[in-house]
Length: 229
Image 1 (cartoon, rainbow, N blue to C red):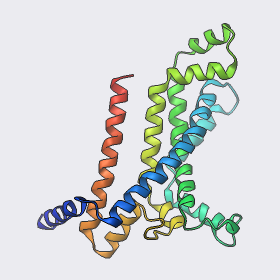
Image 2 (cartoon, rainbow, N blue to C red):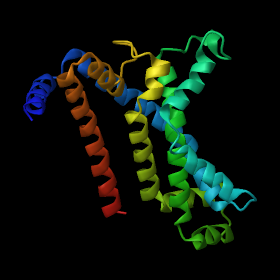
Image 3 (cartoon, rainbow, N blue to C red):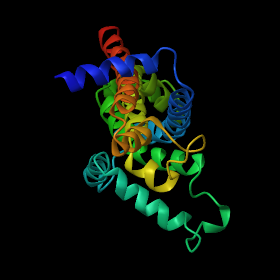
Image 4 (tube, helix red, strand yellow):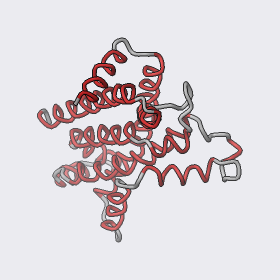
């Protein structure tokens, strides 16, 4: 217990005020996760709405695919992107390996299935008569889709927040395609892994506390949305 108490007290000292490298990792994590979630949401929310409302063969199989992709290991995504970004890869000439755009791409691939699958569930829960009524009154299909998305706004908001949590918490892909370079690609999760391997448990715990604070804020937002549909 003494080990944990010493590490915790040291961690609190590092967090107040934020030490330079800690602040850098925090703001980079927030930045890349926000960009990735925004892009994934712009793609996943409309796609989830379309899948939920459309009737086509293989719909259940497609939904099962998205459900499976929600749990894909981050290291698998990292390895797939590494194969594309390495010098001999298809996108090697762009020099994306070990850069923030590489991390953002990885987090998009991780959060996109989450947002899409939860968006399908959110839109599917909306009364179908709302869409049928809109179409009967002369609304175009894309307008009817917009009405359904507005009706499912609480569920869609939870989908986006959950996708953000998936993005900011990943470590494997960021380590592989980002390289964990100080002041360039180091995030909270990769910094935690690095400092733990170095034996700097107090700093690793400090970073972990910051990450927990972010998750706490996300969960508070989800609960507020659930309580105020």
